[in-house]
Every structure is written in C-alpha cells, then in structure tokens.
Image 1 (cartoon, rainbow, N blue to C red):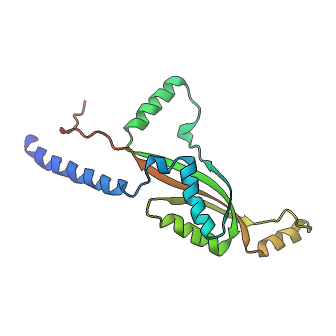
Image 2 (image 1 turned 30 degrees about the horizontal axis):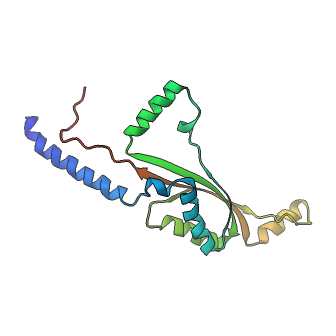
Image 3 (image 1 turned 135 degrees about the vertical axis):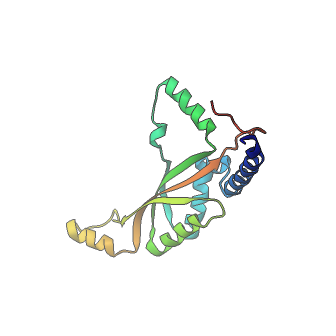
Length: 170
C-alpha cells in the first residue's frame, strides 16, 4: 500500500521543488545582499528621490548573538540545512514624506524581493534651529523634511542537493 503511493509522492515532491525554484527566482543572489551591494541598491532608489542616507548597518538578529564554539558549530550546521537565509539592514534617512512614500514603493516593487519591515518617522530638527522646547518641536513638525529609520529585509536561497530517493525517517 505504501509502495503504491511512491509515484504520487515523487510527483508531489517534484511540484514542490519547482514551486520553491519559482519563489527563489525573485530572491536576490548572495552577492547582491553583501553590505556594499545591498546599500548601493537602496542608495540608487534614494538618489532618484532626493532621500539622503545617513547610516546603513546590517541588523544582527538574536540567532546571531555571540555563542560558544560548540553552539556556533551547531548553528552553522543548522544554517547549512536551511534553504533560505535572511538579510536585514537598518537605514537612517532624511527626506520629505511624499518622496519617502515613493522610496518605499520602489523598494517593495523592485524586481527582487525586498520587504520594508519597520518604519519610524520623526520631525527633522535642523542643527541650526534657534528655538527651544515645544516651539522647536512644533517648527520641526511643520517642515516636510523628516528623519526616517527603516529596516529592509530580504532572503537568499541556498539550494540543497536533491536526492533521487525520498528521505527516510529514522
């Protein structure tokens, strides 16, 4: 009875594999998510819309915290088994709100998968502002220029070697 299901399971595995390949085709390649390449992609969008990038830093996730050598080896082995790797970057920007909306739209509609995960928008207080206290905050809020922080995330696909036989449970 179980043997009779093998052809259908192989067909299902093939279809799922093809589906993963389709999804993976929109993901950036590993070389496109290195710090300089990733930041340059985002900077290209920013330049077009007069958004200034003040900082761009990789986001360290909890699973990348310092650990013992044995734990690091286990984490590396687990990561090697995963088909997808996450890459996130935190950006600090200055720009006006309408252009920022266009900027986010460009990021999320790029031909590769990028997702804006977090956004924080604050009034931009110019360093030469002479007012103090609440007056300063009100004046900053009136300006179209904003101080913006966002986290952009993408994934890369690491194809695993495909076996010709279904894996056996132990």
